[in-house]
Length: 114
Image 1 (tube, rainbow, N blue to C red):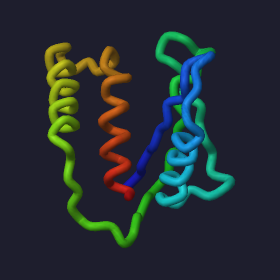
Image 2: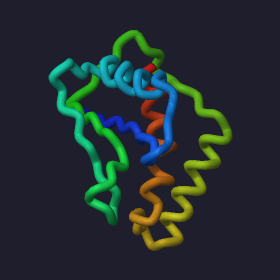
Image 3: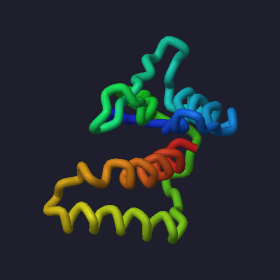
């Protein structure tokens, strides 16, 4: 099954801990990414010059040694429900919710690969 992970870089002029970037790289390696795996710079929806996320896409991921069941914090579930409701209220158009969708997806992906 194909899998995609993303990392949202800081806005221009802002900073983040190096560990955040290192965590993204570690997750990509845990899914099977190699040193020569391409990293796509995804641009913002309305600004082709602004990088919104760095993305690694893998044809298949087969994390091993991980439990078959993961648990979500209630706050993560509530956030995901709110995003899905907003998409539903917008007649299925998720374009206005792209940023809101990204965070829960990244957290769920992280749980799946840890």
